[in-house]
Image (cartoon, rainbow over all chains, first blue to last red; front, side):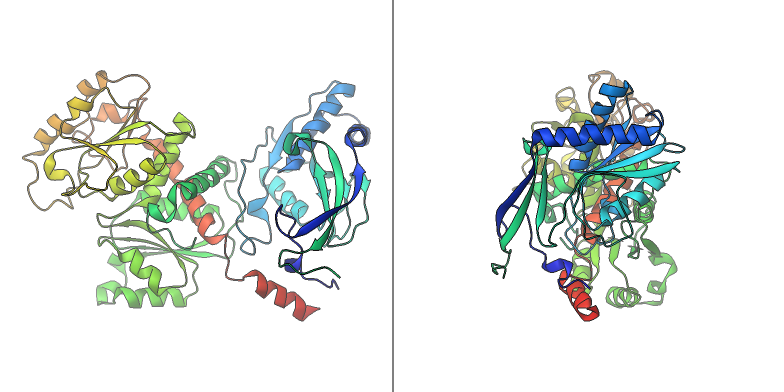
Length: 205
Length: 319
């Protein structure tokens, strides 16, 4: 049984609490290699890129999906359709935290019969992916749904695993893994941050 | 935010938030399965003390597409006819366990009173001559889809019976909050007695402003609200203030014509004008569902009945 309820988790929002950079895990080159490798793995495992749809989960998952599509196009010569999904309406914690701002969902093709690869930056509890599975199935009946993430940081709360992983990163539960992508954050990289003081001003032991 | 009683509850920032949500929900309404589980387990009751087709159906559709349960209450077929007071009705409905009340009433201020009586969120679906905030929100949403997010400097004429119109009052607030330039047009008898504090211009002649506006928002002549003789005949009103085909011919190709519905064809708007490509009247209705989804989601998804502390306690108890 976990010791801390989710609600006392330190808030990683900038300006809340005091956070220190513990380690830089990936720089821009590492990230590029990981994307290229995952692109190859997706095509290899599905015997081509013909039936694949990449669907990114807001915010950074959309950038991941676009980069994977670009990578696949560069070595396979196939333009894979890319979609974007906001899973806010499907979350299991609606009403437990402030209503998030929503971004329009875009699924450019009929997913029925195709292989959907969900793309996200970090796989943590698995609850976002659970919501995304429900959302995708509302659009049709894909032949298969697979999951690609840049970081798997453990601490799953649901029976969900990723098919393609950039980096397995064992973490403490109250650490924060920050994937930074140029499309959103102006630079590329993956970092682990430690909470020294949480949002209530309490110092971590 | 707990209630939506008037546009002032939102302010310019809140309007922007709701319209942003509405864009996401507009996509949902266009899906093959236009339904998401966002408000599963919530109950929305619509209490209509006044006749309505589009607003009631629009709210119910919105709630259903968010997977909320809906209950409908119309004054004509309820215990109100046996003399039940408003307060007792609200308490009875609330005792069934509800999360939101959508209310329309012929008296201004009823939603405000209800908000003081109940734990549920109250949404004003039109109270007397006072406000109709969701109508104004869907109107500015429709405008933004056609004119881009920035409505600053957009010239909007609101034509007709402003005095009795809650739609006009809410729209003046919403449009001016977003920086639009509003002109009220109508005979002096149909203007509010005092316009001080309203950031609007005034004209008593439609032909005077014709050709100088980007949007013509035509109000319905509300025969049910007008008890006295405020203009000689409907024919004379149509001749002086109706948006006729002759007037339409003098307007540019990129103007928009709006109307909150239901239209009195041949009175405030000619049939051919309502069906003109520049008219966005049916689009307003379609957008209404997405905007009302956004309003319900904004009110009900934000602060649920189980605050974070409760969940923390639940988990602590389980551990």
